[in-house]
Length: 524
Image (cartoon, rainbow, N blue to C red; front, side, top):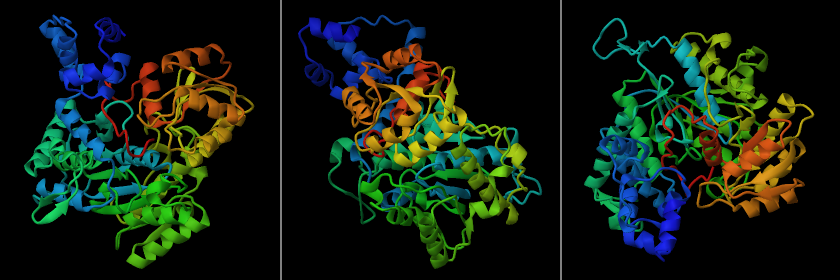
């Protein structure tokens, strides 16, 4: 607010100041509103333009550097302007320039509309508890080499992150360090620069050539996926669990070398990219299936099961249906992820573990021990008097409604919600309405967000008495003042991340720094 007042006192509008500082108007807007964390260059440029003296001591400068996003990360984040380009040619070429790190470890590849991130988290937790770490050593040793407190770490790559970019790159349940993150970001950045793929040079329009092959610009997600491959190869992981970003067939993660593929529940979402029917979307997800690699399908309608099993048969992949291998009665009450939908996810994970066990790759899983340590922030997560969930599409809303009915029978909860404009918001709100007492609408930190007024109007259309709020803090305050039940926060994973920071429950990473995330693609 101080920056805004100073700018107005000088008679300069936001656009003029952005041009003067050589920064985007969006970045300046976020700085004025206190959203996210700016680069050090942005802070100093604005201070100089407004005639502000920072007068920072060395210690203060170190703190400022820690709370500002890395310049290299920001450089990679510029690639968000390229949106998403389905296809594997670019990521293959980028990884080839990096020495094909994706070939250095076996992967468990997970796709699906809903539940895939939770299944990844459950698999990571279970493998930490059950895996023997018995991958053969290349040096011919008769025992595996210890890395940390266990033989060869377990890698986990998911998206998007809620607050910190490092959340995406996890080893043995812990995000990689900022130093490691910076190192792998620089490695990818340098490889791209050698190609002459600078965003400022191409403007995101023309393809570039590498070795005679025409390549589109590397996207932000492709760069991050390459970083994950580098991180896991560098750590010599026992195996890595890789979550598809969008779809499957043309997702950047689909150049991995899987030992097992998993597909969770499939429904209508991202229809502009994946198709407008469940069958078409299932076919895209089935694109991760590889010849000879087992595929485990989570609980799904018969039409999805037919598409996936047909593709498996076509390529010669052993097909397993999770409910045939495991049952919800086997899932212990100490499952750390709450909600009926997470018991379904645990069944899928348990079935996947049994397929790996039958092949002799891991020890037999013990359901009573596997899943008690799983962590998946922002998904039906209780934080004091608040319940934070990233549900943003109709299938997720249906699962959330069922969980609310089970956990809070007969109760109606105040709702704080914000949505991206490309979602079926009306369907989500009508599904949740029977469990909601009143609504408080906010804008999310995403350019494609609906305004608070637009969301409030949609809430009213779904039968929810609602009011727009200027900020998330205001919405949380008002909702909690009326609450006789927990306040539900949902509508977007970006909103979930904002809420966890606002509530002092920043996931996994202690520093409250918000790193850049996908703003144009996926709109979660």
